[in-house]
Image (spheres, rainbow, N blue to C red):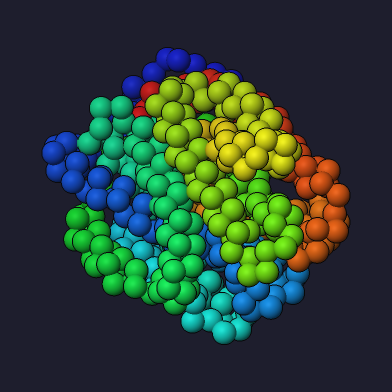
Length: 446
């Protein structure tokens, strides 16, 4: 069967029955046994996503305290996606191979311990060490977390996998919203070392997560039967679709990361006489929080409204729509005040937050026996390539650091935001390559 022949008709029942005989489909767990683990998982995602935004939100303060060079400042943003994202493919492979939930609770404990300790760093290299270990911890959590969210949702929620993954994604956004507020306000009130107070409750919740998810399934029901029934040409078609989704997600994550880099530049430009950079830091934190609010809202709406099997069209036009506010964040903020910038930052999330959860659930359906790997590719591994975002931002700004941003004309910052909007147009073009019949076919399998 070729990819062109995949239609709305169900999969070949003979092939499916034959595969099921060789590998019986496991009995579904009653919904009531999945509800508790599902919602505990959502809370854990909120908790763990509080910490990765600490460095971005405190970037201006860290730059001032540690006397960073422009290259070191850019490295702070670049290293996170690399060390958090690239190893996710390995952690996802190990999760699927050994059917383990270890990476979820251990990643939460490790990430919180290191990223809440950044206030103790006295040099750039100490900060980077804490960032590397901490972001590796948060990275190892996400493939198994997303895979658990998809599978538990099949058992615990009425609307199934896509809705569950969107809730999981949005739960992380709550952490992204509160993280900048928590870290900037705690730092302003008690100093950056006070962030260490958050370690103990986070480790305690990691223990709770371990207890409730230790036996929870993360792969699709009947995945052995589905996998064995696939003809070779359909397997190749599924993998081609995976790589298209992966490449388009790279564009989306570069935009997501890059505009946060530009937030710091724009904030410094708005407060040129801010000696202790407090105002610029608070503005940066507010922008990151506004972006996270938009990501939460549009992530939920995308997962609820985009129907399985019909993802291609919405992913295209949402990317096109989202490119507009991305390109206008600084322009609107300069002309109508910070609240206009906050609104544009929140609205910009429609270009990536509404589509990323759909790519995760779609990838899980495309690779039912490797849901951890599918989730890792759509989340961390594609995000890791977003390490180019700070250098792309620096290129668009003529190579200056945040301390020299006042030497630039205002239009240059506007142009930098527009340069990231172009990447969403590329993501839309890539999505055109997804075959509609294949998407409808895998949607019938759950």
